[in-house]
Every structure is written in structure tokens, then in C-alpha cells.
Length: 183
Image 1 (cartoon, helix red, strand yellow):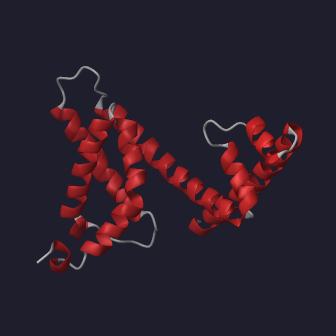
Image 2 (cartoon, one colour):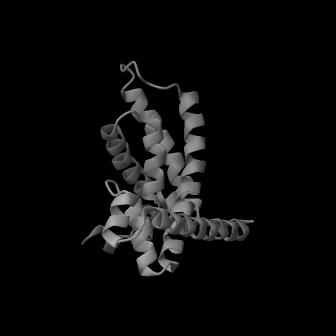
Image 3 (cartoon, rainbow, N blue to C red):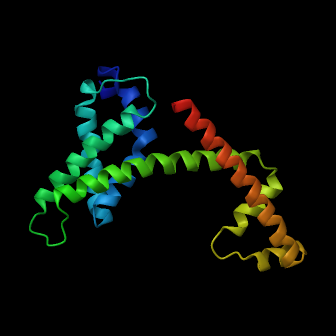
């Protein structure tokens, strides 16, 4: 029998971990020097979170699992650090604690911003969304896009700036709405 069939909490854990994995990975990435270390620690974080999931207490806040997983991640980073103590480029536990606290707060803010941007981009008409995204794609310049569209560079700059303003207003509004919900 599979693990999912043996434990009814398995699906809930997988959903929560998948939802917050990016944010937890960002925290771990801010505390470790190499991507290989991040990958190793994230595997351990996933295993420890699963083993201790029965101890996790769900509360009303939507980010309870994220905060809990970040605590697990911090301890796994410290464990990894102790295992690599012979390395000279290791941060002190106090520094890791400070970076962990800061990265956890920033990670939540960045995720909220990412979701707001995605939502606001979806509200733009397809052609305008495509224009904004193409301008911000590596290798594409406004001059190249203007030439492809048969428009003047100045006119396209004005249009892109107007779209950026609309997108910025929408994102700020979404973030303000989200902040009001948590107060």
C-alpha cells in the first residue's frame, strides 16, 4: 500500500509543502552559499516536515505552515552548518538566525507581490500583456519591438510606461487589499 493510502494527512501535507516550497527554498538559499547545499537541505526539510507533520498545529492564519516550515528549515540549515564546520566560509548561528528572520519576512512579501503581479497581468488585454512581457524578456529591446510592430520608439516607450503605471497601480491595490485582510 502506498504512503498516501496509509496516512490521510499525506495529501494535505503535499499540498501545503508544494504551495510554500518556493518561499522556504528562498529562505534556505539566503542562508547557504551554494545551490547544491540548498538542494541537500531542502530534501532534509521536506523529510523532517513530513515526519513531524503530526505535530504541526493548524491555526487560522494562511501562512502557519510556511512559518512552521521556515523554523524547520532554519534548524536544518544549522544542522547542515555543523556538519560542514570544517569549511571556513560558515556563518555564525546568530547571523543565520538574523538572516533567517529577515528572509522569512521578505519571502512572504515577495510571494504576495508575485501573486499580485500575476493577477494584475491577467486583467490586461492580451496584446498589452504580451507587449509588457516582451519588453521585459531578455534580449528584447523596445527599439526591436517597435520595429517589429511598425511603431515609433517614442510612442512605444509612452505606451509601455502607461502600461507599467496601470500595472503598478493594480499591484499596489492588490497588496493593500491583502494587507487589510490580515489585519
